[in-house]
Length: 244
Image (cartoon, rainbow, N blue to C red; front, side, top):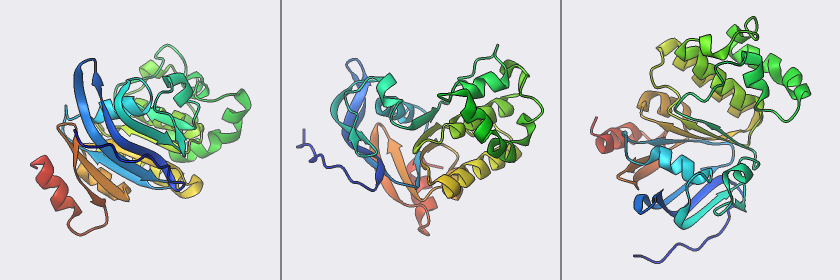
């Protein structure tokens, strides 16, 4: 095993992973992963199913212990913090699986992401601009929404908390192109207006490259490629690694 990289916080990074090795019990899924999300930037983490993308997010959030390495959020070492303390570091998580309370209204689901009621009233108009369908349907039960509407509600809830860092896990899966474009516009607007950094876990290369500043490709639990999403060869590099 190689020597670990020296841990040094970078003040311009919303997220840093240094030599992170993690998994489930004795099964190590991630091996010596190094990754950073500069403040105010969007980084796309691409890879096929089963390569460790969701494991990486859960390791960042403290749901899984790290066997080795370190995680820093906004310059703070959170490697050993439990999940509830990581959640207090101004980070939001939009999971791949639906994480709504189906028997609660849209309004109540939105409120759950905030520390006090007044914040909902202060910020809801901006959310209506991004997702207009919410305006007239706040009392509707979240479980009665279509799949695409539920995904938009998840994103809306994350945006309401005004995080410094958003972790977004395959938000486009199963969505129609019109919904994908609306989600992309919402994320783009959030970054422009509030300087929010994002780690965008995706298999949709088109969506990822249209939004991201940088890309990272994960394969068999290891980073195999990374670079600027604006480079002319970025798509070819990603597709070659994903065998598209």
